[in-house]
Image 1 (cartoon, helix red, strand yellow):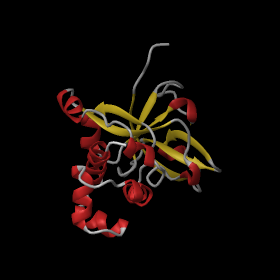
Image 2 (cartoon, helix red, strand yellow):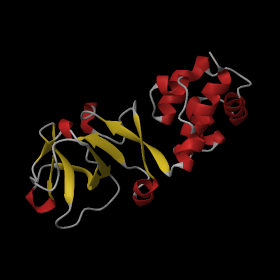
Image 3 (tube, helix red, strand yellow):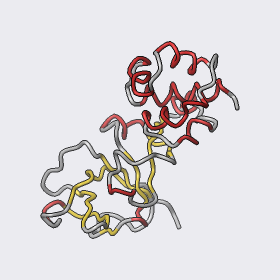
Image 4 (cartoon, helix red, strand yellow):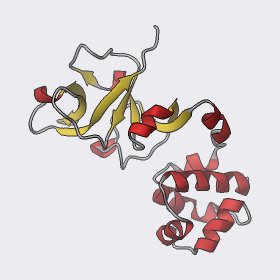
Length: 184
């Protein structure tokens, strides 16, 4: 296994979570110097891959796979954001392990760095403003206001509707920012 590749992935995800090497080291149970050695590929992090992936809130395979070319993403004005094809176990998109990522325009992450995508086919859409196909950008940190479309969870089912029409007991997961339409 390529320690340099794994180290690069650790650095990417650590920075994405705004953690210092010292903070990550504390979460994993090693010194910041060891995190630095992992990131530089000097030491193999394989013996600690599970606690590192847990601390970074990513699947261990994400740390072992070849990363997206970060320069490519910068050059094209794209950001890597999580995409969901179903509602995660526990119904919490923020705490769910992220397995798949999508190259999204930078303007999306400028609105909310925690933005994620969900496939329209995975949710019940109760408004005519959205189509039942194509990914939908969701901002979990934006405060919804009247007439906003929101993703909400009700009885274990994910739905989108206009804010005043959602059930009172429903848990709002985020505000709809946009939908990417794909031609069938």
